[in-house]
Image 1 (cartoon, rainbow, N blue to C red):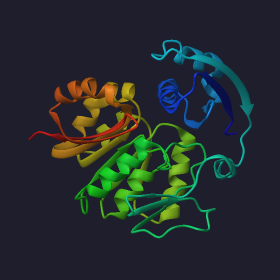
Image 2: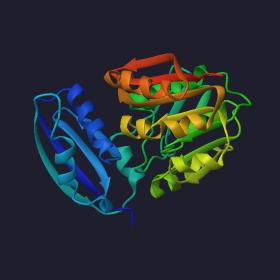
Image 3: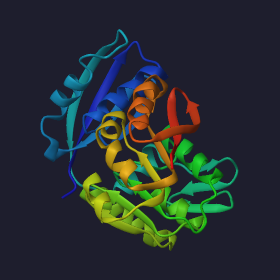
Image 4: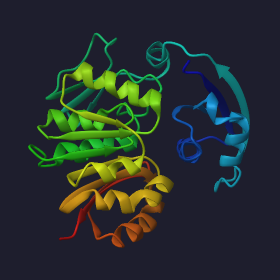
Amino acid sequence: MNDYYSVRVDATPCSEDITDLAAACLADAGFESFEPDASGLTAYIPVAAGDAAAIAREALADFPIDTLFDIKSTFVAGQDWNEEWEKHYFKPIVIDGRCVIHSSFHTDVPRAEFDIVIDPKMAFGTGHHDTTSQMVRHILALDIAGRSVIDVGTGTGILGILAAMRGAGPVTGIEIDLPAYENALENVALNRVQMNLVHGDASALAGLGQADFLFANINRNIILGDIDRYAAALRPGGTMLLSGFYDDDIPMIEEAAARHGLEESSRLVRNRWTALALVKRH
């Protein structure tokens, strides 16, 4: 059963910067999905992770902004997560007028060049978060047709699906979380694209060969820990897209990238969330 803990985090004071930063801290601790609001946010983590409230308290213990957090945890039995997303969060979104992202339960959907159907369940990646939407913008700008792509931490599969729609191939997504991997399989089928999926972590890259593009929209700590593997899986001259971190984190990301022959070619920043494009030197 796909059971979760729902952790309510009320913040005093509360602002968009505080909820965004709290979500980033919680994501580093293993939380998978977030619903921000005017007084804080609700975060979800699999039951298997352990004491959810304690994990949240530890993740927010060194919060850099003077904030008081009230944290409560509630068990949520496996359920129809599509219904929950429809009621609470997920609405159709259009990015740069070219890409519309919606779920199969939506009926009034704007038209766009690329129409992506995502039934997210508890997997991350609907396009609403700044990290995902900026990765989408990068992909829309890439000359990607006929080029190979690896998407690490694919979540719902959204980035790989868009790459496949734009003519990339082969496209491979890697996902460590089993429910997210299964969700990505469903979304690939919904969109009728060619995308291979691997259930595993960054160690799976060793068996895939080098790609022209590598995407990783995860979080700062995982990126820093695995960037050597990312670089090894990228062809010389290839492009790596990284997101899931704040603009304050750019120097440490670039320092780690430089050690593996990667140089920044462009960046997108919105609400302090950043998506970097890096090119691997020949």
